[in-house]
Length: 169
Image 1 (tube, rainbow, N blue to C red):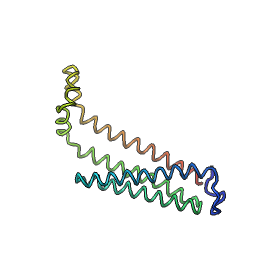
Image 2: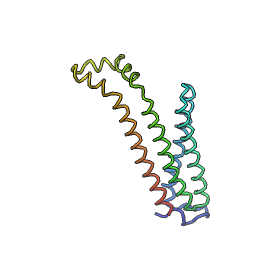
Image 3: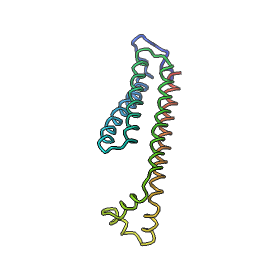
Image 4: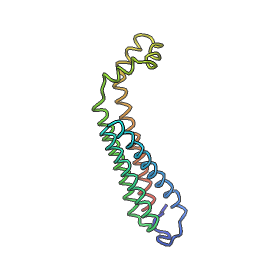
């Protein structure tokens, strides 16, 4: 599907452009809005790492929207390639944040949260041995969850990047 060459600069919109423009708009606006909300929350709670990743999300979203507008007006395939690399940068930004969160994970805090109500009430329903194993493994499971989130981010962003690259070649 070549969305960049047909009717470039004429104002006419080939069919393939609609999906490309929809997805890039959805991606750009989602990143900008979620990043903006995250920036407000992170600023309120005083999380420097949260503020930094929020700024990165807003930046990736704004860049995507700017490139989308440029593609809309010119149809130049290079714009789609840049959008693809923006997705790779987004995956890297999110992965750095998630890796940082794993590196500063406070195991004692996780353990303390597990013995508070209502979590502990659920854990009390488990046999003693299983309950103790769950409590001991929870910090590692939180870390694995962060790493799975990074993997999912890479899969989605690389998939989106390949779509952008293929759609605008």
